[in-house]
Length: 213
Image: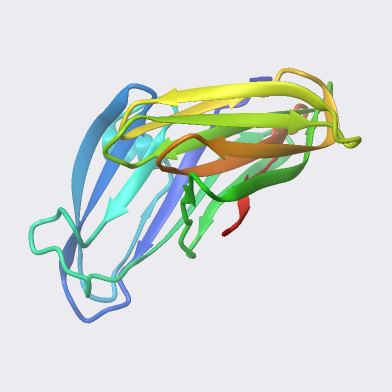
């Protein structure tokens, strides 16, 4: 939107003394799009400045799952690696980046957890998208209830997600410093919100915070 063309920069680091293979699987709203195998040597650092285009020959948005343990040939619990990722866009005012992963692992939210995103804003100056990634062998229903700063419900967004799917939707009702209360009717998912400045396209991504009952 607003003249921005986004790319994704990804780095992979193998801090071990082992050579192994990482599988990277791209998921979209209707399921798995493509899977690739990435050989990585001991101590090697791999970098892609436009990961979806360069690695997958893909244009669009999605979620990527990196796996060095379960499914690659020779997969092992000892195949340890680190991932960093950022979405960026170049403009006359420079580069604007949104960090997606900084090397630490994202954790999924279970159906019985209380999960939230807070401090979200939708206005003429900012837009907010919310998303979910269902990396499970079952269909799930995810509901996001959006409350204003006074605790009033202003919007409800529902994701009906088949197994192994990613999806993202925009919030459409203006809100300032609002709160998203997530509800999973079953299963588990990775949940997030990303707020983007409409002029610069600079974004801030927030994984959902949750409380384990």
